[in-house]
Image (tube, rainbow, N blue to C red; front, side, top):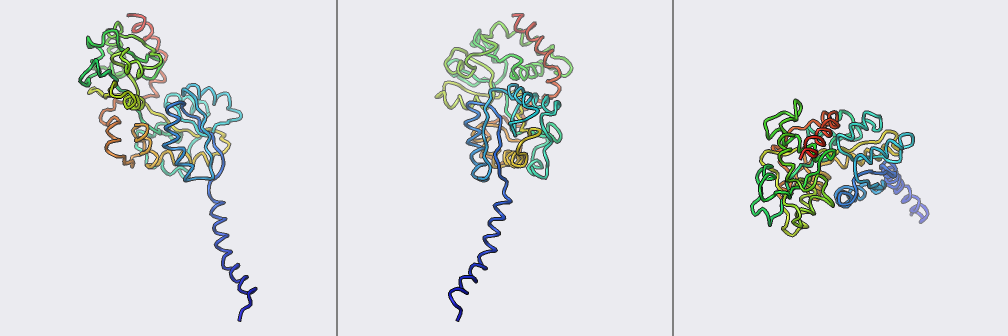
Length: 350
């Protein structure tokens, strides 16, 4: 008969491989602490809920610190200041601003072997070669006060409606909403923005006398909700949030002429302190799971082609067929010229 001592050691030997496998599995799990730089306020709260918190539950060995900033331009300035010693690992920013970061060497190529979800992205999400792809698509929307417009406007031309006289609010360039509206207005008049924005600017010049503000304060959503303005432009994501919060006072439509999509990219910072963990996070953010959550919570159109959100969530985003082609790389190159013409002919000419 075996002694108790022999039994003890036999059990210990039997258990050891299991313990070793567990320890090995844990050591193979990605770990570390990363800093994510992205938008503040409403975006921070909802992106944290949709992506950051589920990620940290799935990868408990990685901590994500959210560094909130108001704009992509502000993030670009921070990255420039930190270029020699970056404190940020992942940055979410508008595609036109990210383009400058790629050119200046602020971002690093993303390794497809470490971010396999790159293979699931739709073709229009691959906006920068090996660099940061599209994370989400948002769409310019027309927002309206329901007391002043009983029926949802069907066209962008509703801004010229007598009910909106002196009660239109537009975010003019350099705000990207104004750049998107330039593309839309040019298309409405049968033009091609890459050839000339003359038709679009001529149309917007006729709207200028009815514009209450070119820089709505506090924001177009609030002004339309409280009736100070009748119509305005806004991003669909924010618009849907304010629509829900307005108690039925504000409506949102994607007009029949179509819309321009705004692209936010997710970027790996060059020289990131924890590049491995950062790419694990990027891979998760691009997954169909995270993309479905972003559609549900933030009303973004997904970049991952395999995303299958609920029909009611998809209904609150712009359908792909509504998208007007917008080459944001080209727009970034001509942005200053467009801005000067807006100031001189549209805003200054009214």
